[in-house]
Length: 158
Image (cartoon, rainbow, N blue to C red; front, side, top):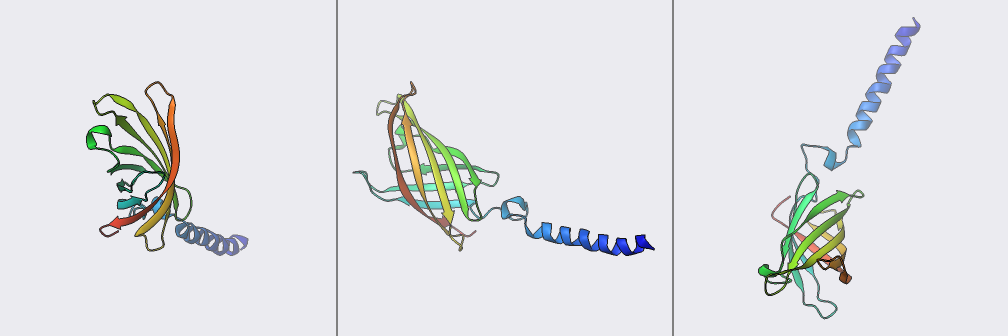
C-alpha cells in the first residue's frame, strides 16, 4: 500500500523536474533554435584617438566561432579577424579574436589580439560593446594597445 502512495508522488516529482528542466535550457543549448547572437552584423567603431571611424562586418556562427572584416587598413595589409565567442550571461557575450597585419611591402608586421564584450538588445537586432586590443610584433613585443566602443546592427532577419 505504501508503494502505491509513493508512486504518484514520485511521478509528480519526476514530472516537475522534467518540466522545470525543459524551461531552463538556454537558447544556445537548444539545437532547434540557434543563439540570438548568431548572424551577420554591421558594426561601427566611432572615431577616437586621432583615428577615423571604422566599419566592421561580424559573422557570428553557431558553435562559438566568428570571423570579421573591417575597413581600417587596405585588404593587402590585414587579414580577416578570426576567433571565438562565448555566452557570459542572458544577453552578454565575449569574443576573442586575432588579426594578422602586414606592412605596405607585404611583410608580416604582427598580430592584433582583441577581446570584445558585447551586450545584445532585447530586440536581438542591435548590440553594443567595448573592445580591448594589443598589437604584438613578430618577436612578441607589444607595440600598441588600446580600447574603444562598438555599436552593431543585425543585417537581414534573425
